[in-house]
Each structure stands twice: as structure tokens, then as C-alpha cells.
Image 1 (spheres, rainbow, N blue to C red):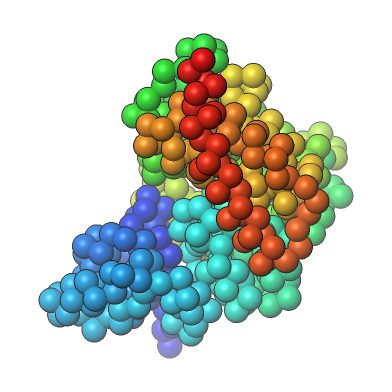
Image 2 (tube, one colour):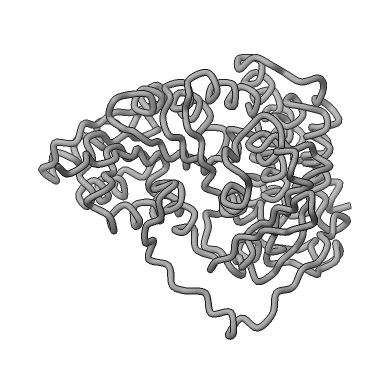
Length: 401
């Protein structure tokens, strides 16, 4: 008898991670089905995906667009149920409509639905690093209490997951492991000094040399904040202390991360820079399925380079380590301030070097003791965003002076 299809809720279906996940799912119609799809505001794109994948439920994040979504689904002659708003995302993430939840909503907006999936005991495919940065202790507690299975989707954490002893996701790092090494491409400005970064444009910052990503995560990669957030994520996923997590710049983006064992052995996961590999791993684990990714030609590659990150030109990585040492309150401030700062940069309100300046200002003003409750974390997130917005113009002025 044929096994039942594994139903996947793809939250953030119109983004780059969602598109890659749907590509993998479509390659295995006998194993997976995209049963729930969501988008924030892109109604037309969401309807097009529904035509292609025929989910049971479609959710638009902006509740004001529900009628437009329902009309689009009717005109496409689909029976897909239209829902809208943050409560609907939480509802579907914990419902019987899915077995796995791909958490790929960008930013802290993905936190409530990610927590809902964890509390419901789902297989949680975590691509939304901000959820664990803001509420790592709460998320991991929910995973443990419900028996949920958390599998990271970030290429670096997927690599660590594959190289660590199982179970890889745990409260403290396996005693046989000495350190975790996260690799960073260095982004589009690798090797440039601070002075040359003064006039960087959003278009330049979003032109990543290796990965195809959304604009926010592309800017995070350019500032090295993306790597800082990944350090915090690794701490919560694998129980590592900050001193056990190292970042090295690896411009080829072929070695995705490494695990050093007590005996001196280093295990690394290598592959082409294609998110479908990590997504296929998470969807099928512990099995392996094809992902549409070609073989890695080591002879054509020729060499692998590694270098230390430049935290003078790119201070966001150092700010992330500082926030991690202070606890959940500081990491919440770090994430919220970064989201506002990146948005300001993309809008032309703030220069590239103003991003770490604004984050540091918010950390100095608001970061305090760890915050254990979700309501308090959300309140701190909101107050940080208000401070960042009201401080942005003065930071921009200081940068121009």
C-alpha cells in the first residue's frame, strides 16, 4: 500500500526559500504535497502558486487582502480555502492541514507561526532565523515539550546538523565536539575598507556574488549581520557556548560549515551554493532525495580559501556576539534594530555604515537582562523598533558629518 503523502505548509511561499522548497516538493509528487501556502502581500503570485500546486489552504498575511485572494482563487476555479492575517498563519501551522511547516517568513513576523508549529509537535523546517534569535529559549522549550522535530534549513546550520552526532539539536553541545565553524562568503564587499563603504548603494549591497536571496537577507550578508544571526541560531540549536562558535570567510561558498571533534578531526559538508540541497535534506531526513542540484566538480573548483572576518569594516558580527553574551533581551534588540536599519538603508534614509551604528545605539540604550516571556520579548521588540525609527535621522546625520 502506498504511503500517505507528507503534507508541507510553506510559509513564505513567494520568497526565494519558498520557491526552492516548492521546486523540491514538485520533484517528488509521490512523497510530498504543498498543502498550505502563504505570502505577505503578493496576492497574484500566491494565486499563481496555488494554480500550480493546488494546496488546501492559502494564507495572505495582510488581512486587508483577503477578498482579493478569495476572488483570485475563485477566478482560477480552485477550491483552495482563503485565509488572512497573523492568527490564520498560527492556525494553519498547528492544524491537521500539514505534517511539516517550512518557516520561511522573513523577520520577526515569522515568530508566532513558528512557535505555533513547535508547540503543535510538527516537523519544523526552520529557515526563519529571526524566530530563534528573538525567542531561542522559548522556541527550544516548545520543541522539547511537544516532541516536535526541528531541522534547520539555513545552509550553514544544515551543514552542522549533518556533521554533528545525532540528535544534533540539543540543550548542550555534544561533549565529543570541540567547536562549530560557520563559513561566510564575505558578501559583495569582502576586502573593502570602511572608507570605501561610505557610498554603497542598495543595488550594490544586494548583488551577492554566490547566492540568490531576497533584499533583506542580501543586505544582512553584505554587513555580516546574517552571520551574526547564524551564530546566535547555532547557540540555541546545538547548545554551543559563544566561545565554541567560530566564523571564517570562505568566498567560494562550497564548504557550508565544519564541526571539529575532540580528537582534532574536522567534518565538513560541501556542495554547490543552492538552497535546494538543505531543503531536500530537511524535507526527507533521515532519507535523501534528489533536489535538482548538479554534482560538485572539485577539479574545476581547484582551491578553497579561508580568511578571518574583518569586524572593523563590518562590525555587525561583533555586535551579534556581544548581544549573545548578554542574553535574549539583547538579541531581541539586535534583531529589531537591524530590521529597521536595513529597511532604512533600502529606502535611502540611512547609509550602509549607518546600519551598525543604529544597531549599536539601540543596544546601548535598551539591552539588559534576559527576557523569558514572549509578551515581554514582543514589547521589547516594539520599543526597539520605535527607538530605531526615531533615531535613524540623527544617525544618518552623524554619518554625513
